Length: 624
Image (tube, rainbow, N blue to C red; front, side, top):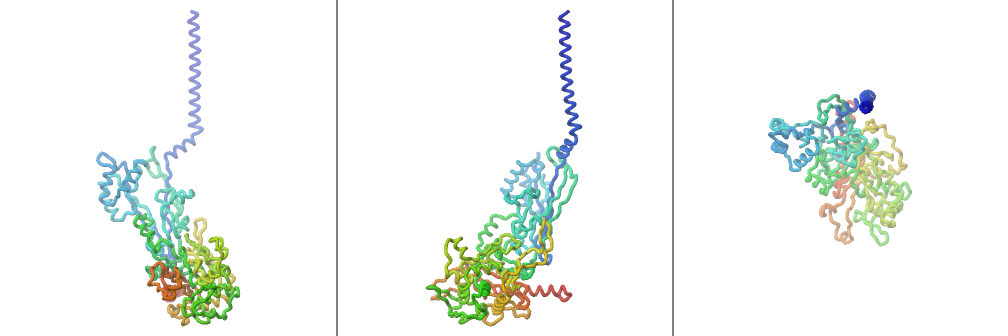
């Protein structure tokens, strides 16, 4: 009996302990449920909503690029893309391969395409569309749509792609767009993570990329547990890219490109007061659409193997010896430093002597006794040998830099090269050698180490023509700030610190070059009243002429291989009585400046002034 009571008590205690433990567990469970469902309700409701609702970025349309008259140079066009959904293509009656086989009867699908598609099919979820081909023609789309019932899993998407309707015309200024490279990621714009997003890779497309690309929008879509889109809940369109207006006159650009033809050449025309670049042509050119859609191996090989460098914008990246066009700077340096006077004469017998070395003039018999005016008019080498010797290479370089040579001009284009204005200090630092007196003479006629770009030659000429103000060139009509374009303010260019008298003397010589009989460009003058130009010819040698060749007769350019022919140069401004435009023409291995470059510049400057007169007449209500 006693044992039964003890056993009962023990059982009761154990039951109580078990019940208490269960009570504690139930209480803890209830407390946890209260915590999760009541206290943390908002948090988990938000997480559940985030799992159900997916935010997708929307790509905004890229801004257009237009010339100064509003003609479109870079636009967006519909881009038809064919994609395949692996899970829809694979069924009891078909497979991904059979769908691709059927599709290949309608559009080209390479083995590389197939390998890529299968790789993406293995990597992605089965319901995610895989791109088969982009940039389909309307005929391709029509063929696919007609056969859609026999193409399980195939869909057509419509998007936008960059298109350059003028193809080669203005390609170097425009640049192109392409996919973001890993090294270009900024991690500051979510658009960079979007598949198919492209950024500017050259020209104004690169410089003004942020403003042109716009700001992204977004779309809220409801998805299931595995991420499949069920429906769109909300959509907010992005901010389209800003349209960019250029200073280029497309009609003049087209005329200049036609006038250069098949030459490896560059021409720049700019407004000497505002800095607007009206023409910047570099030939040969390329089609930026090829980069937008993706270059083939053969296309890329053809571009990079072309000896005339179609991918290079020679106007800003081509570095050439300026030849006799540089004599204008040498004259200014000598005048401003009182190394010569305007009336001082130098006897040219066809050469001058420095030690035991002869330095020849281009005119074998010499020019006789010439002053500054006659030396510029006839481009006398001996006169400028002497002027350079007197003023020295360092002062020449200092004057050249004032006029925009030997350093980037600051134009709003990528890839500008600085050229080179040598000094004694430069040679010792760069080559570890002292400067020799004979190098100063060679520098005085724009040869030797001296290098410049066609744009720098145009800037030099513009600063001469505007009376000595430091005009800076630009190709965009607007300034950019925080992804916004704003009208440019009226320029207030600094004075260069060169006297009006010196500039007037040099300009008088340029006028004689083009408009006085005996001037090196007289045959390429403009004869229409009110359109006269003033210029300076230049011929830059790219090979050394030996003493023996001079004795037997210097070979003509047409007798030499293309790579050994002289560069032809010409700079000018117009109209002479009220300067407004400056031009520089460089024809690589083109021959003589007076015979080749000057006629090109003349014809382009006639067109420039005609269009300007028509614009003024139209603005004033006259015939236009």
